[in-house]
Image (tube, rainbow, N blue to C red; front, side, top):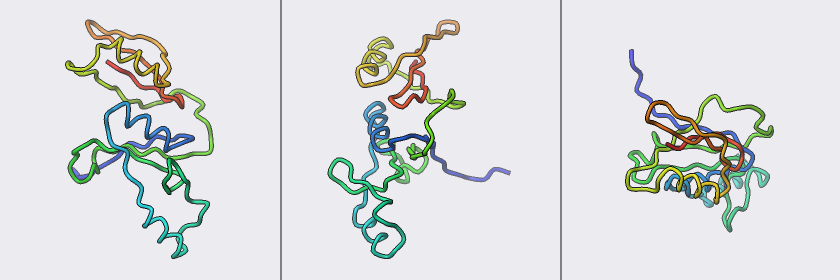
Length: 149
């Protein structure tokens, strides 16, 4: 039996707001906006405290999470969403899951895409190939591996 679901990908990280913005800029996605009125109401009603919030880029945000969505995604991005969630521990081992970003035919070539990502704070890890296909394995500013192909 198939159960219809929607899902999001969640990335554990140290600074969810900065990393979400980095990935939004990288992928051309949108940073989900904050809802300061809702946050203030949750504090006023006792569901949250000031320690649960953060001021970032001149706005009030929840402290431990930020998300990005694909522009124009149906259902407000419910199925095309990446949540960046703050965790206390640092990344210690290789990811068991990673994103593959495909450089489009109308975009930069693979080397230009790698160089642009390096200029924005990514790290180059290695090049791979299989048959006629090649890719670069890289890491975002917090060390999460991803590939561009």
